[in-house]
Image (cartoon, rainbow, N blue to C red; front, side):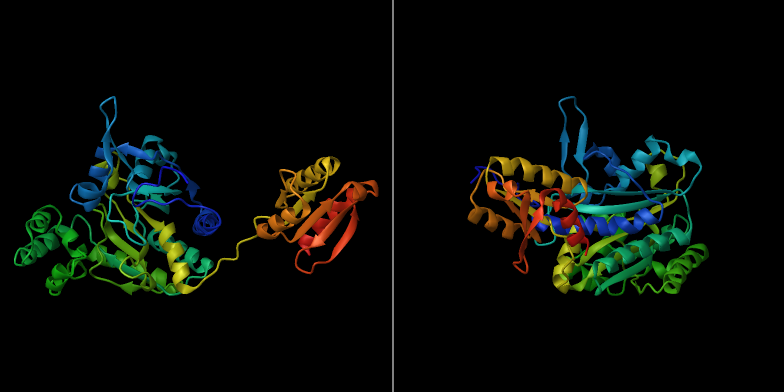
Length: 421
């Protein structure tokens, strides 16, 4: 046993569980690829200022949860707590918006870091798949992203999640609502830290999870009652497009999410089988973020879906993903000449796309067969000196137990044929 352990609040993703996580990432990415989204990868750390501006200085993410440090050169950096700010920074730096083909559609996958109280479904290191559409203000793009996430979850076999939908208005109608909300919140019995938040970003108070605060928010004014005509029409179009495509959603006038950059459309995917950590993903529109980062006006929308949370949702529904076997053929050589022959066979099968493995270390037949069983292989190929003298290998069907001799030269083709059939 190692002297060292994974840091508190983190986890190691090990086989066989890692196969399910990889399958979830692939299922989420698959619809994005068919909709024109290109893959982007950004550094695991960025300037602290990027997240302070992009995520919001008043958010818990920046004030309490971000892993920030100073380099030997004096730079202030932070492990990325979310993906959008980094993706937009990279797109601006790379000039992707200048190619003239808007929106710029990007998807990404990776690990993110937040210093939080560890609990099931909430870790200090977690995996997400995200998507961003940059440079277009169009309800169809908002609807497209929600539909693609819904398509991904349905392809995985999830059924009991819910989509919550709201609009947060824009720079024209939100100021008046903000003032009305501040007046309401100042009349409540709140602690000093929450009162400070009222002055910086009062919408964040609506996202407070403490029951003592939530009880007092019952009569809070709602942004949906203060939307300007343009924001209301925009939101109605998003709703109509989703409805036309058969995507069910629930209007949630209190949904604000935990980031400062959202405008207009905001949404969340929740799964009630996960207890208090019910959100499996979410996102929204962030039309002013590019300007906050020093770029041109690039109205944009995006989402991030949690891989860890999605796996927990699958477990809650009892969904088992149809994962292909890691090994289809297991070769067992008995003797030096057989090692050379079967190693060549395994290499040939792998080149043909067959998942094949080999009994290493010169173990005996009994131990090698146990390893073959553990591998989940559909077939084993066994060969000894006598078999090779006769020009054959022994092919065994692991399910039926049937064993037949097959000419060495025909073994690869015969295995491919059986596995196809």
